[in-house]
Length: 416
Image 1 (cartoon, rainbow, N blue to C red):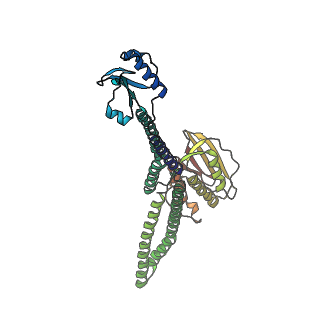
Image 2: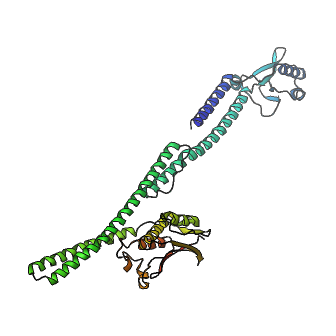
């Protein structure tokens, strides 16, 4: 910008200095004295045949015309020449009388067109400077658009994206607003980081509250069952009323817990899943990271591209592997194959498994199989895993053979 302003000022100064020099020089005398003397001698020699005299002097640079004693033009060096006393005074023309015996027979008037040359020169320079300044203005508009108006427009669009909550689009750090744009982009990244942190905190809060609220149901159910049994078996009317009061309060607490649990699960269902194209190696790496006890046997995964959310798939793998640790605590077998334009993933352990009629309920909210009653848990692991897999466009299925094995199959769509 500073360079552009300096060039503009330099052009204006050059134009002003050039025009001042032209005007200071003034019009130059365009009459050649040698030619003028020759013309005077020749016209006087051949007078009154002035036309013959003029025709003999073709090629002279000096313009002149010959008049008679009454001022009528009788010959001229070129057509279109005209003069009078006023013109003669202003333009510094001068004349020579043709005399014979002291009598004026005619006059030779030399035309001084130096001022016309000055006008032409000034006009030429003016047009040249006008063209230069026009080109400069066009370049100035282009420069301003590229370095000022267009960056400001992009910054305005970026501010609109920020206002709408779209923090994934980085700002274009132009040369004109480099530090300013970079500061805005840092602000965007900080907002995006804060939003992700808030989402993760909300997610963890929902999971903790949902898990605790579900786990409270078991001891509350035990209290309610004991109170109900005691109210039926006690012989004291006063104790029976006390036990009925306990039952009413436990029912009230159960209702509040149920509402809290349901609301937290609804929050969990709003977890954002963003599937994108991933290499199959990322799937294998997620399974290996989830297996911190090193129970998974060596496996090979075919090279392909799938649609998945890497972070969410790691959560799926954590849930499945941790369930295997908790309920089976055996070696884990992982297999891969292609099926219906999907990559199929089989994760199988060799523990007690579940009953056949419980398989379809394993992915429901807070459902736990009969063989899991003695283990701590909320019954949400497989429910969340299925929800996340569906969000990636895939599907999840649980299969089991009681007292033999338990298998989770996941289908992830291949990238087109």
